[in-house]
Image (cartoon, rainbow, N blue to C red; front, top):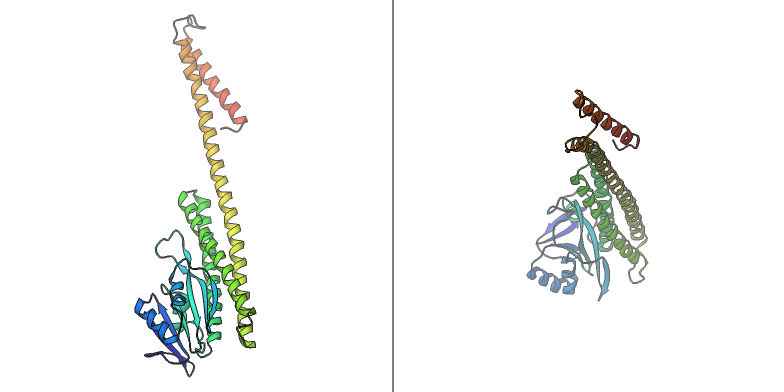
Length: 310
C-alpha cells in the first residue's frame, strides 16, 4: 500500500499524485509500487526493499544524494502474547524532493502521525521530518517500557500468591522483549549519533537541537530498559531459588514422614517372625508393642522436628 501526504497550511493533507515536498508512505508495498517509487524518486531499489526484511539492522547509507536511515521500532506482538513486544525495521529515505517511509506492517510510529495524535511536521523540511520520526521512536519505546514495567509488577504479585510455571513463562517473555528493546535502542543510538556528527549531512541549529533531544530520550530508554532487565533477571533468579527451596522442604518432609512410617513396619516385621520375642507370653503384649511403636514414632518425630525436617 502506498499513500502520499503533504503539509499544506499546517495540515497534513492526502495527495493523489506525487508532488515536490511530499511524504510517501509505503506499507507492505507490492513489487510494482516499489519499482514505480524507485523510478519516480530516483531511489535505489535496495533502499526500498531492505527495510522490508524483519531482521534488517539499524543502519545509515548515503548514495547519490539519497539518504537511507533504517531504524528499529517497537511493535506489539499480536502473533504470540507470551512475548508482548518485538522490534521491526522501518526505512526513512530522504531524497532531494521527498521523504519516504517504508515498512512491512503498520506501526504506531506512522499511524500516530496519520491519525493526528502527534504534532504536524512540515513535510517540506525533510530532515526535520526524519528527526521527528527518530524522536517519536524513542517516545514509543518509553511508553512500551512503562507498560512492560506495569505488566511485570502484576505478574510478580501473582507469583507471590502462587508459584506457577505460567507466571515464570510470562516473565521470561517480558525479559525477551527487554533484550530486543535494549539491542535495538543501542543500534538506533549509533545511527542518531552518526546523523548528528556526519559532515555530509548539513543540519540547521534547530534540527541539531531536535536531534539532540531525540538522542537524550533514546538514551533514557536504553537506561530504563537495561535497569528493568537487570531487575527482572534478579527477580526471576530469586523466584527460581524460592521454588527450588520449597521443593527441597517438601522432599525433606516426605523423607521424614517415610522414616516415621518405617518404624511400625520394622516392629511388626520383627514380631511376625517365628522366633522368641520379648513380651510374647504376656497377656498385654499387643498393648506393649503398640506403645513401643507409638513411642518410637513420637521419638523419631521429635528428632526430625529438631532438625527442622518436619
